[in-house]
Image (cartoon, rainbow, N blue to C red; front, top):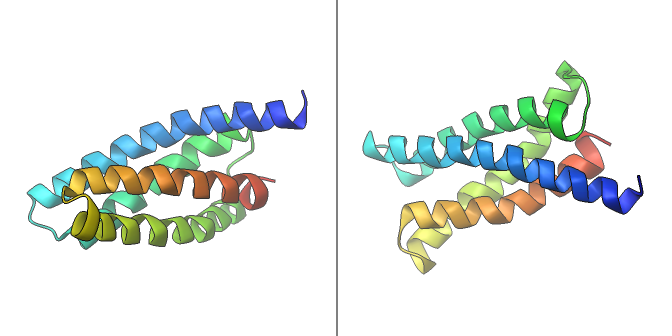
Length: 126
């Protein structure tokens, strides 16, 4: 398989795992808001749950690597950058551009997806 094709297959699989993680992220975010949490706290908690789901699925299904403590810690380090981007964009979009916290969260996830895949492909699972 060519390098480009391998990356395309991984990106499409990462889209599936990212979609599953996004369900946890958006669902957890909505639950947090309904429970009375602030946008920031709800976004942080839902992102952390989604990151765990994403690692468990991505390590096997996307990058076909064994789950290791080192791999998980590296994934969390990379995810922390995605976390900052995701939460910052959620707050910014909901406050200044989109109005709806759920729409803002969805847009932030889409942008963070590209960022996270790039970090995972080039650093975490290389």
